[in-house]
Image 1 (cartoon, one colour):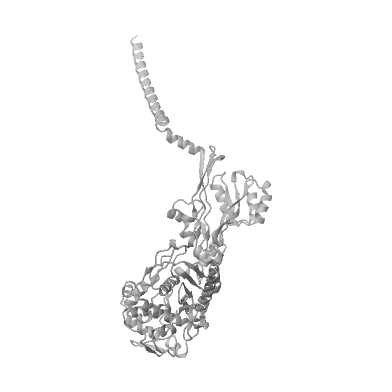
Image 2 (cartoon, rainbow, N blue to C red; image 1 turned 180 degrees about the vertical axis):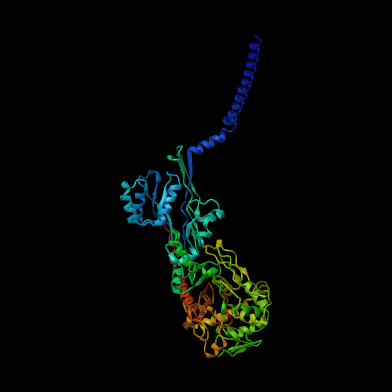
Length: 620
């Protein structure tokens, strides 16, 4: 009996513990249910909806790029694609073999496709080929009954109607990269601006993405489309470029290596900017082979570089006007003061040669600019000093970025005492002032800086900010340099005579359109050292030298001479003499420009198709 009572008590205690445990578990479960179904109901409702609805972004149409007259420079066109859905393919090897036959796929591309098929979801489409030609596209369509899982479709691509003519200005688009995502955040679509205007104005051109809501099943496959909100197309951009003038400039530069820029001297609008040799942006937007890219990167004439903003050259004699202005401002010489040029300027035991071996005889400031007398400017530079030369050059915008709306602009180099100490840890020498006086030595400028400098010489001493956007609302206000008008008149007179008088270095390139003439200045920059022996035996002409040893040819100028409106700079790498090579190019462009102003063309309406530092020596 006692044994039975003990067992009954033990059972009751166990029953109590079990009941208490069950009650605790029930209370815990009830609390969890209350938390999930009441407190977190809104959150889990959202997650459930996201699991049911697939939300994707739609790529908007990219904005168009046009010239100032409305001519399309960057457009959107249809492209033909071929995709495949792996789970729908019965015979993968056979399908890929047939696609290779019709689409001309490389073995490397086939290996890449197999990797994507193996690693990705079987129900997601994979792009096999883009920009498929029509015959291949049609052949795939005819074979569709025998190619389950293959889907030909249309997409959108970027095209550049002007091709090489505006490649460096307009730029191109390419596949987006991780660096692009870090720089700009989330990017809808597969492409992004890689260079030129396409890169600089990427955010404006890209537009706002649309949104598509699609109901999916538990395995992620589409069931039905619920809602689509269209995106906002990218903003159209009108450039200041005159495409007719740009074509003429590219044509005149063909066969050379170099750059030229034409600018409105009041607004800073660039009417033309060409860099040669160039490349076809249409091929780049589709992607180029690595081997082709490597060849272009190491090419001697650098087709990928926009030399107008990145090419750095000694300005040669095109710099002489600034030395003259520095002397006039400090009243160190009078314009009528003369020196005698014998062809050789001796200084500190060295001989500095004028480009004309027999010399120019007696010359004053205007005649020295007209005839580009080196001896005059050797002497003038010593009187002015490097500090004043450096200061005047910087006032005209040299040695700093111009502020153009393009990425990658170079600053050039304006040397001085502090610069020499910082870069060479040694002091400045007077002989370096001598060669700086003729625009050589350490001095480096870009073609764009030279046209800005020329504009300031022509417009009364105002520094303008160059721009590729049409419309004055986009421009910064010109900044007065503070040069006296009477001093500008002296150098303008010399620039006029350089082109329009028989002794001028650019006289062969003079023009007359109505009553309008061109003023300007030539420059020839030596890139090799000429020995004393060679000077005694006769300097080897450029035509007999290897290309890379020939002089650079430069010219800066403006039109019309009485009421200046447009400035130009031309730099031809290893082209020879500035008067023989660069000045004729400038003349032809300015003739076209002046004639076009007489009968301006009617504006067009864009219609989209679809969605090395130089050595001291010769200068002229």
